[in-house]
Image 1 (spheres, rainbow, N blue to C red):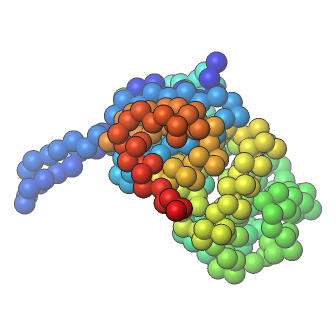
Image 2 (cartoon, helix red, strand yellow; image 1 turned 135 degrees about the vertical axis):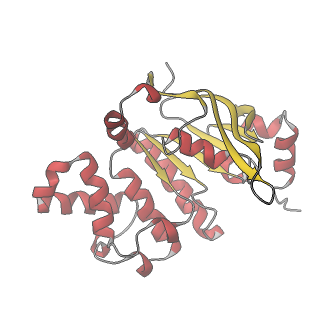
Image 3 (cartoon, rainbow, N blue to C red; image 1 turned 180 degrees about the vertical axis):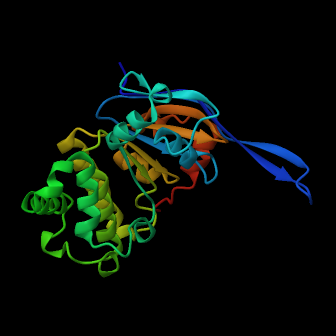
Length: 264
């Protein structure tokens, strides 16, 4: 049985047109996507800007309701679960966002941010200050940060350090599935490889299943086991990572490959 299965997942938005909004058009952001994801796998999801990658991730995260189709997690259709069960299951799938500058609350210390995430899984630690501090310190060290800095605010860290904090926050609820939406695109190239290596190590250490979203095939090739290519709301190709580079099938994949800088 697959760990995550998307069954003909669709999300359409209605947009008003005309001077007085009298007409409407339908935007098919996600249009009949079917995918399966194995436990412990990293699936790369690539495509040009506006192809529907981020909308698809929000459907998986239950942040948007699908127009039709289903998200099945460990054999359960999430749409069939009552709201309170969805809230409980949401601890099992967490998201790492693109911009670490915007995704962290500037008014909260690192300790408060990570403690809040940890308490969603371990509410009993709310009355155990030393236990909570220990859990926060361990989380900091797991992502390669010095636990002495937990009382600092996000603006006191570099971009790469902030993204490590964002990753630590995603790990706080001890998820099984992590969706990483362009997590290195806002970082300097010299920092990108460090974050990619961290994500690969965390997958191995914690047996995480991961969807890594990007427009950059060279980045996805480094981290993904398989790659799914998206165009205009549809999945047009799914292959093993190396196989996709050797024998691309769709025109959009060939276009994305041609955009990778070549060293001459």
